Image (cartoon, rainbow, N blue to C red; front, top):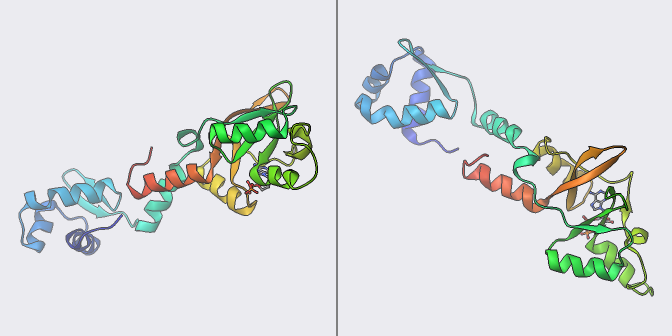
Length: 209
Ligand code: ADP
């Protein structure tokens, strides 16, 4: 968050003179207490200042970077996930391509007969098979997908920042959001680069969920 000149001056005054009342800050700046009220509210709500009744304002020692890190820490998968696009292992590669177009996604999550996560299919997995000589109608998704246990996934309580880290380090576009079901994993959502970007934009607009 960008502070204006007066807000920065207020922080400097409070740092030197804490505890200091709103009246005293106003005197320093040669303005009325009422003029300062919005700035003091913003600085207190954003965590730069701490207001104690009948004592005055204190500097919390928080830096913008630390406050931003705290906000990022609070962003959880649960608030940013999308519905998953899921395909059965036995579906053909051709059906998978159709589904990608219909659902407008770049990755499909593959489930077994019990509906549990068994793999992930990306656009390039399909392209790789398409440049081979096999017939797309006859190759099942299970043959070309990346499969468990090598699938990277997350859970709804995980931090968005940890998902971003996974997407970067594993060089993938999406992870399924899962919950445990017996010995397997049920797919309940998806987190993609777009979901992480959406979270980033909420942060930029100060609209953390
Ligand atoms: P693309 O290569 O089509 O741009 P990705 O970068 O997401 O898409 O996929 C790269 C490779 O990683 C593909 O072979 C894909 O099957 C695999 N992959 C994609 N997502 C995951 C995941 N969550 N866990 C494990 N492997 C994945």
